[in-house]
Image (cartoon, rainbow, N blue to C red; front, side, top):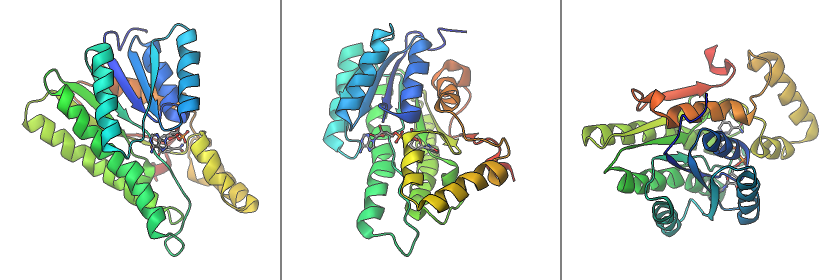
Length: 259
Ligand SMILES: NC(=O)c1ccc[n+]([C@@H]2O[C@H](COP(=O)([O-])OP(=O)(O)OC[C@H]3O[C@@H](n4cnc5c(N)ncnc54)[C@H](O)[C@@H]3O)[C@@H](O)[C@H]2O)c1
Protein backbone atom coordinates (compact mmCIF):
# COMPACT_ATOMS: atom_id res chain seq x y z
CA UNK A 1 0.00 0.00 0.00
CA UNK A 2 1.49 3.36 -0.99
CA UNK A 3 0.19 6.92 -0.85
CA UNK A 4 -0.94 6.81 2.78
CA UNK A 5 0.61 10.26 3.35
CA UNK A 6 -0.18 11.76 -0.07
CA UNK A 7 -0.55 15.55 0.18
CA UNK A 8 1.00 15.77 3.64
CA UNK A 9 4.04 17.80 4.67
CA UNK A 10 6.15 16.12 7.37
CA UNK A 11 8.97 17.67 9.42
CA UNK A 12 11.27 15.22 11.25
CA UNK A 13 13.92 16.47 13.71
CA UNK A 14 17.11 14.47 14.10
CA UNK A 15 16.41 13.14 10.61
CA UNK A 16 20.05 12.63 9.61
CA UNK A 17 20.34 9.29 11.38
CA UNK A 18 18.65 6.22 12.86
CA UNK A 19 14.91 6.27 13.50
CA UNK A 20 14.48 9.80 12.09
CA UNK A 21 16.19 8.91 8.81
CA UNK A 22 14.24 5.64 8.43
CA UNK A 23 11.01 7.57 9.15
CA UNK A 24 11.88 10.22 6.56
CA UNK A 25 12.29 7.55 3.90
CA UNK A 26 9.14 5.68 4.97
CA UNK A 27 7.02 8.86 4.99
CA UNK A 28 8.36 9.97 1.60
CA UNK A 29 7.66 6.52 0.12
CA UNK A 30 4.05 6.98 1.28
CA UNK A 31 3.80 10.20 -0.73
CA UNK A 32 4.68 12.86 1.86
CA UNK A 33 6.83 15.89 1.17
CA UNK A 34 9.43 15.54 3.91
CA UNK A 35 11.77 18.03 5.57
CA UNK A 36 14.47 16.56 7.77
CA UNK A 37 16.22 18.80 10.25
CA UNK A 38 19.34 18.02 12.26
CA UNK A 39 22.22 19.69 14.08
CA UNK A 40 24.58 17.61 11.91
CA UNK A 41 24.49 19.67 8.72
CA UNK A 42 26.90 17.52 6.70
CA UNK A 43 25.11 14.23 7.31
CA UNK A 44 21.63 15.79 7.07
CA UNK A 45 22.35 17.37 3.69
CA UNK A 46 23.98 14.15 2.40
CA UNK A 47 21.07 11.95 3.45
CA UNK A 48 18.46 14.32 2.00
CA UNK A 49 20.42 14.38 -1.26
CA UNK A 50 20.61 10.57 -1.31
CA UNK A 51 16.84 10.21 -0.81
CA UNK A 52 16.06 12.95 -3.34
CA UNK A 53 18.30 11.18 -5.87
CA UNK A 54 16.13 8.09 -5.35
CA UNK A 55 13.12 10.16 -6.47
CA UNK A 56 11.75 10.98 -3.02
CA UNK A 57 10.69 14.50 -1.99
CA UNK A 58 13.08 15.14 0.91
CA UNK A 59 14.83 18.39 1.84
CA UNK A 60 17.16 19.31 4.70
CA UNK A 61 17.32 22.28 7.08
CA UNK A 62 20.02 22.68 9.74
CA UNK A 63 18.45 22.91 13.18
CA UNK A 64 19.47 22.87 16.83
CA UNK A 65 16.30 21.81 18.67
CA UNK A 66 17.44 23.59 21.85
CA UNK A 67 17.27 26.96 20.06
CA UNK A 68 13.97 28.86 20.14
CA UNK A 69 15.10 30.98 17.17
CA UNK A 70 16.01 27.90 15.13
CA UNK A 71 12.58 26.39 15.76
CA UNK A 72 10.76 29.50 14.50
CA UNK A 73 12.98 29.61 11.39
CA UNK A 74 12.63 25.89 10.60
CA UNK A 75 8.84 25.86 10.98
CA UNK A 76 8.39 29.09 9.01
CA UNK A 77 10.79 27.92 6.24
CA UNK A 78 8.90 24.62 5.97
CA UNK A 79 5.54 26.38 5.67
CA UNK A 80 6.99 28.86 3.18
CA UNK A 81 8.47 26.07 1.06
CA UNK A 82 5.45 23.74 1.09
CA UNK A 83 2.51 25.99 2.06
CA UNK A 84 1.59 23.95 5.16
CA UNK A 85 2.80 21.64 7.94
CA UNK A 86 0.73 18.53 8.65
CA UNK A 87 3.05 16.35 10.74
CA UNK A 88 5.88 17.08 13.17
CA UNK A 89 8.02 14.19 14.43
CA UNK A 90 9.96 15.36 17.50
CA UNK A 91 12.66 12.71 17.14
CA UNK A 92 16.03 14.38 17.89
CA UNK A 93 17.46 13.07 21.13
CA UNK A 94 20.57 11.92 22.98
CA UNK A 95 21.29 9.17 25.51
CA UNK A 96 24.32 9.30 27.76
CA UNK A 97 25.23 6.66 30.32
CA UNK A 98 25.76 8.33 33.70
CA UNK A 99 24.37 6.65 36.84
CA UNK A 100 22.95 9.01 39.47
CA UNK A 101 26.14 9.36 41.54
CA UNK A 102 28.24 10.09 38.42
CA UNK A 103 25.89 12.46 36.59
CA UNK A 104 26.91 16.12 36.49
CA UNK A 105 24.52 19.06 36.55
CA UNK A 106 25.77 20.10 33.08
CA UNK A 107 25.20 16.58 31.73
CA UNK A 108 21.72 16.46 33.25
CA UNK A 109 20.82 19.87 31.79
CA UNK A 110 22.13 18.99 28.31
CA UNK A 111 19.93 15.88 28.19
CA UNK A 112 16.86 17.82 29.35
CA UNK A 113 17.61 20.69 26.91
CA UNK A 114 17.66 18.41 23.85
CA UNK A 115 15.19 15.71 24.87
CA UNK A 116 12.57 17.79 26.72
CA UNK A 117 12.95 21.50 25.94
CA UNK A 118 13.42 20.66 22.25
CA UNK A 119 10.14 18.74 22.26
CA UNK A 120 8.33 21.52 24.16
CA UNK A 121 9.50 24.14 21.64
CA UNK A 122 8.57 21.86 18.75
CA UNK A 123 5.04 21.26 20.08
CA UNK A 124 4.46 24.95 20.71
CA UNK A 125 5.76 26.09 17.32
CA UNK A 126 3.95 23.35 15.40
CA UNK A 127 0.64 24.15 17.13
CA UNK A 128 1.12 27.80 16.09
CA UNK A 129 1.01 26.91 12.39
CA UNK A 130 -1.17 23.76 12.50
CA UNK A 131 -4.12 25.05 14.46
CA UNK A 132 -5.93 26.45 11.43
CA UNK A 133 -6.06 23.11 9.58
CA UNK A 134 -5.17 20.32 12.03
CA UNK A 135 -2.24 17.94 12.09
CA UNK A 136 -0.36 15.21 13.90
CA UNK A 137 2.51 15.65 16.36
CA UNK A 138 4.55 12.55 17.17
CA UNK A 139 6.97 12.68 20.09
CA UNK A 140 9.75 10.11 20.50
CA UNK A 141 9.77 8.93 24.10
CA UNK A 142 11.10 5.45 24.89
CA UNK A 143 10.46 2.44 27.08
CA UNK A 144 12.80 4.46 29.34
CA UNK A 145 9.91 6.92 29.70
CA UNK A 146 7.82 4.15 31.26
CA UNK A 147 10.25 2.06 33.32
CA UNK A 148 13.45 2.89 35.20
CA UNK A 149 17.00 1.99 34.14
CA UNK A 150 19.75 2.76 36.70
CA UNK A 151 22.37 3.57 34.03
CA UNK A 152 20.48 6.56 32.60
CA UNK A 153 18.60 8.68 35.19
CA UNK A 154 18.73 11.87 33.08
CA UNK A 155 17.45 10.00 30.01
CA UNK A 156 14.72 8.31 32.09
CA UNK A 157 13.57 11.68 33.45
CA UNK A 158 13.61 13.28 30.00
CA UNK A 159 11.61 10.52 28.33
CA UNK A 160 9.08 10.41 31.21
CA UNK A 161 8.64 14.16 30.72
CA UNK A 162 8.04 13.69 26.98
CA UNK A 163 5.38 11.07 27.76
CA UNK A 164 3.33 13.48 29.90
CA UNK A 165 4.06 16.61 27.86
CA UNK A 166 2.49 14.67 24.99
CA UNK A 167 -0.71 14.02 26.95
CA UNK A 168 -0.93 17.63 28.17
CA UNK A 169 -0.48 18.96 24.62
CA UNK A 170 -3.00 16.46 23.25
CA UNK A 171 -5.62 17.62 25.77
CA UNK A 172 -4.88 21.30 25.10
CA UNK A 173 -5.36 20.79 21.35
CA UNK A 174 -8.53 18.71 21.81
CA UNK A 175 -10.10 21.21 24.26
CA UNK A 176 -9.44 24.05 21.84
CA UNK A 177 -10.83 22.14 18.85
CA UNK A 178 -7.58 22.49 16.90
CA UNK A 179 -7.85 19.12 15.14
CA UNK A 180 -4.26 18.37 16.13
CA UNK A 181 -3.53 14.87 17.46
CA UNK A 182 -0.50 14.38 19.69
CA UNK A 183 0.93 10.94 20.53
CA UNK A 184 4.12 9.46 21.91
CA UNK A 185 6.16 6.54 20.55
CA UNK A 186 8.05 4.25 22.94
CA UNK A 187 10.66 2.14 21.18
CA UNK A 188 12.64 -0.50 23.01
CA UNK A 189 16.24 -1.11 21.92
CA UNK A 190 16.81 -0.11 18.29
CA UNK A 191 19.97 -0.68 16.23
CA UNK A 192 20.99 2.96 15.57
CA UNK A 193 24.12 5.09 16.10
CA UNK A 194 22.59 6.20 19.43
CA UNK A 195 22.69 2.61 20.68
CA UNK A 196 26.18 2.05 19.24
CA UNK A 197 27.42 5.18 21.07
CA UNK A 198 25.81 4.11 24.35
CA UNK A 199 27.36 0.64 24.18
CA UNK A 200 30.68 2.09 22.98
CA UNK A 201 30.86 4.35 26.05
CA UNK A 202 30.79 1.29 28.35
CA UNK A 203 33.74 -1.01 29.11
CA UNK A 204 33.72 -3.69 26.36
CA UNK A 205 32.97 -6.58 28.73
CA UNK A 206 30.01 -4.73 30.31
CA UNK A 207 28.64 -3.80 26.88
CA UNK A 208 28.88 -7.42 25.72
CA UNK A 209 27.16 -8.66 28.90
CA UNK A 210 24.37 -6.10 28.52
CA UNK A 211 23.84 -7.03 24.86
CA UNK A 212 23.64 -10.69 25.75
CA UNK A 213 21.21 -10.05 28.61
CA UNK A 214 19.03 -7.94 26.31
CA UNK A 215 18.56 -10.60 23.67
CA UNK A 216 18.56 -13.62 26.00
CA UNK A 217 16.46 -12.29 28.88
CA UNK A 218 15.02 -8.82 28.61
CA UNK A 219 13.60 -8.70 25.05
CA UNK A 220 11.01 -11.46 24.57
CA UNK A 221 11.35 -11.30 20.76
CA UNK A 222 15.09 -11.94 21.25
CA UNK A 223 16.50 -9.11 19.15
CA UNK A 224 16.68 -5.32 18.97
CA UNK A 225 14.40 -3.50 16.50
CA UNK A 226 15.48 -2.22 13.12
CA UNK A 227 14.87 1.51 12.63
CA UNK A 228 12.37 0.82 9.84
CA UNK A 229 10.18 -1.18 12.25
CA UNK A 230 9.77 1.96 14.38
CA UNK A 231 9.24 4.04 11.22
CA UNK A 232 6.17 1.89 10.41
CA UNK A 233 4.54 3.10 13.65
CA UNK A 234 5.45 6.70 12.86
CA UNK A 235 3.85 6.45 9.40
CA UNK A 236 0.69 5.10 11.03
CA UNK A 237 0.51 7.97 13.55
CA UNK A 238 1.24 10.50 10.79
CA UNK A 239 -1.56 9.12 8.60
CA UNK A 240 -5.32 9.53 8.93
CA UNK A 241 -5.51 5.82 9.81
CA UNK A 242 -4.81 6.89 13.42
CA UNK A 243 -7.54 9.57 13.37
CA UNK A 244 -9.04 8.44 16.72
CA UNK A 245 -5.71 8.39 18.58
CA UNK A 246 -4.55 11.31 20.68
CA UNK A 247 -2.66 11.44 23.98
CA UNK A 248 -1.79 7.77 23.53
CA UNK A 249 1.43 5.76 23.80
CA UNK A 250 2.56 3.51 20.97
CA UNK A 251 4.91 0.98 22.59
CA UNK A 252 7.18 -0.86 20.09
CA UNK A 253 9.57 -2.86 22.21
CA UNK A 254 9.56 -6.55 21.25
CA UNK A 255 7.63 -7.27 24.45
CA UNK A 256 10.22 -5.67 26.79
CA UNK A 257 7.66 -3.92 29.03
CA UNK A 258 5.10 -6.75 28.90
CA UNK A 259 6.69 -8.57 31.81
N1 LIG B 1 17.90 3.72 19.48
C1 LIG B 1 17.14 3.35 20.48
O1 LIG B 1 17.32 2.25 21.02
C2 LIG B 1 16.02 4.23 20.97
C3 LIG B 1 15.08 3.66 21.85
C4 LIG B 1 14.04 4.44 22.33
C5 LIG B 1 13.92 5.75 21.95
N2 LIG B 1 14.83 6.30 21.09
C6 LIG B 1 14.67 7.71 20.75
O2 LIG B 1 14.51 7.85 19.34
C7 LIG B 1 15.04 9.10 18.91
C8 LIG B 1 16.03 8.88 17.78
O3 LIG B 1 17.08 8.07 18.26
P1 LIG B 1 18.10 7.28 17.32
O4 LIG B 1 18.39 6.02 18.02
O5 LIG B 1 17.61 7.28 15.93
O6 LIG B 1 19.38 8.23 17.48
P2 LIG B 1 20.53 8.70 16.46
O7 LIG B 1 21.66 9.12 17.32
O8 LIG B 1 20.74 7.70 15.38
O9 LIG B 1 19.88 10.00 15.80
C9 LIG B 1 19.59 11.16 16.56
C10 LIG B 1 19.78 12.38 15.68
O10 LIG B 1 19.49 13.54 16.49
C11 LIG B 1 20.41 14.55 16.14
N3 LIG B 1 20.55 15.55 17.21
C12 LIG B 1 21.19 15.42 18.39
N4 LIG B 1 21.14 16.58 19.06
C13 LIG B 1 20.43 17.46 18.30
C14 LIG B 1 20.02 18.81 18.45
N5 LIG B 1 20.37 19.54 19.53
N6 LIG B 1 19.29 19.37 17.47
C15 LIG B 1 18.95 18.66 16.36
N7 LIG B 1 19.32 17.39 16.15
C16 LIG B 1 20.04 16.79 17.11
C17 LIG B 1 21.72 13.80 15.88
O11 LIG B 1 22.62 14.58 15.11
C18 LIG B 1 21.23 12.54 15.18
O12 LIG B 1 21.24 12.70 13.76
C19 LIG B 1 15.67 9.74 20.16
O13 LIG B 1 14.75 10.66 20.72
C20 LIG B 1 15.89 8.56 21.08
O14 LIG B 1 15.90 8.93 22.43
C21 LIG B 1 15.87 5.56 20.59
